[in-house]
Image (cartoon, rainbow, N blue to C red):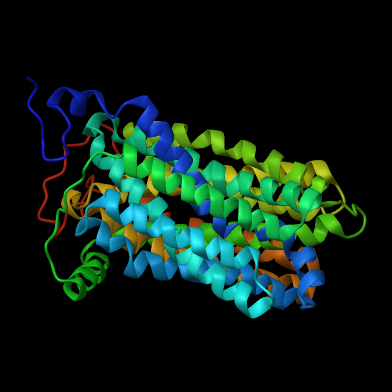
Length: 424
């Protein structure tokens, strides 16, 4: 009889990694739950007309979802270290089901905004499942497993825009959220039946658990840096996708929601880079590929600015921006997950919460930039954020003692990097 660990996995399965069907289910679950944050992005013009609100107010619907997500990262995700993960996931998905039902039946802007705030908060179930997958994988496969699960999450982000546009064209925007409510209910049942038991790794009271999450940010320079980098990257990404629907539905394109859906589908091609990013992380290429991602993103905004009236340039920019944000995210998660293996949920909480604040600010400031200066101001804003992020990485790109502070104060000895490995 094979020996098993506390999660019920045999030692042999620990070495070979989780089964492919479970990785696929986790990827699908992450994609469908995080999609709740992005359904509104291509629908802002429709929502503005339906609810009788301004462009700036409509943009707030994207921002409140991201604020809710950041709040969920701070107050809910740390529970992943203290509460059995299968039970926690089921409860959060039940609340997500109710929030999506409320959004689909909302009588006005206020109720819709409140529902999207709650839906955003409980959609952090995706960020409980990613470290869950990391914990199931052996060290030598962790980057690839996380990359595969993240590819599902990021595909959900990208395809959510296509799905919401197509459903809105066929049946109206409310059906988008009613369909999502049904999907959340199905996921709650499927994950409850499929996930292995994952006992808590911490017994701290809730208040101390939250304080320890903040303490991780103070203790680990890698965590602070990666969160800062991703804040800038995600802010630029959110600014682009929050405002590009105005460009596509206005002159000279005058696209319908189907046209917006096809554009979003083209941008989803960038999701293919996530498994590659995991492979680069496993090879110790975190630093140079992070710099490459920021450089690619800045170039994408230049192309977007030049392509104001050229759909092919806009589509190319969308693909490059999506590739850049996915690469940076996977590389960052790989770096921060090494810091404290027994506190991965809290590390993930601090990392994602910080950069989702950046995403919320990017959405709102991007809407303001577009309102005041049009598409040129928006693309300049995005390019500036990414150029600043590249400058911040300058000191980290200089040769230094490898992984100098990757484990500083963590109390956990990390695996020794291979020759040529990079400090995150």
